[in-house]
Length: 478
Image 1 (tube, rainbow, N blue to C red):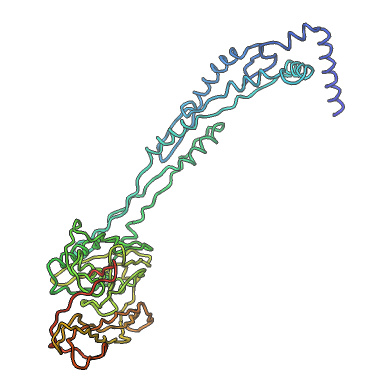
Image 2 (image 1 turned 90 degrees about the vertical axis):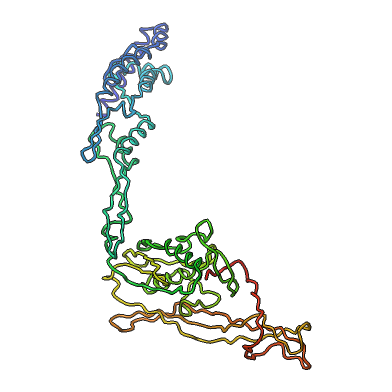
């Protein structure tokens, strides 16, 4: 077989040599310098022999452009059908490249190789395929247009709380065309021209009716009294409580109290009321907000949500047990918490009479245990008495400069109860409310008293106490 092949090739060379002798030098020059495509060359089954590039281009465009319009792709999604011809999709034949390839046959290499290629093309023929290409911007445009027709924005189910009952609307599942996959399918389908299923992804809303529907009852509540508070302080409590009310916390979601309530500014409606700065009550915008954060904190503890950040006040709050307060100061101190359950929870706040109520609702079937909070006094720290000698006072005269305050060290425990039995006890906070010393100015006496003592203050002493300056920018909104 190999021997026969070699013989055939030899005879071809012989024929070329005979042709060269027959043509002479003028004939060779004439053949090699033709401006047309050599004999036997076809492009996409169209004979382009003896045509120059322009003539070949015209005949190819006439035939192939017609062929291009007759070819189409069908794109389908859920009964929506798009019939698009290849030209509309931006596909085109690379005719010039095919013509250049045809023209190059017999024009590459030395004279012998050129003549060999010319003779071979005339004897055996040469078939050239036209490659197809596309305009990516045109495909992008059509795919985006299809996506706009199909895409559907997802919508969360909505939880409504009215009259102590929950009502949940249906969610809307969104649709989004996977444009990158669709573009690849179109490009891969040039030669097959099969029907393409448009790839569409479902966009499931975060809040579905099934998930929100798990909120079926109250899992905790806590309240504090603001009896005796000023009208401005009560208004601040109402504003902050309203910002919390109606918040749905999804599974795994972390929440910031300051993020919900926002800055305590007059433009937000907050009034001026007492706040704690450095252990003293001082007028400031937003006084009373800490009572809301404290009430929320205790309700969260009883609901068994995870507390991520909490701070005690610098002095014990009057409206809650020691160790159960939660101070906030926008930009400094925050109450942050997280829903560790696999069901959502809903916060409801109410201001009724002289009390603030915070309710947490969730899945009562899943939370089938009870949480109790128990603070324990570790140590009571008595204040000291400091005296400052003042020569301007009469001998033996005492004037109060600063009222003292007892300090407390408190440990607070969270106890898990099930079927009236304690199954778990954990220490959640260790707080230290620092004492504050009594300070007096004392007139000169014959024998000066010691500067510091633990003397119990005289209740009849004249009280001209003044606030001690705060210890920085941090403010406990009381």
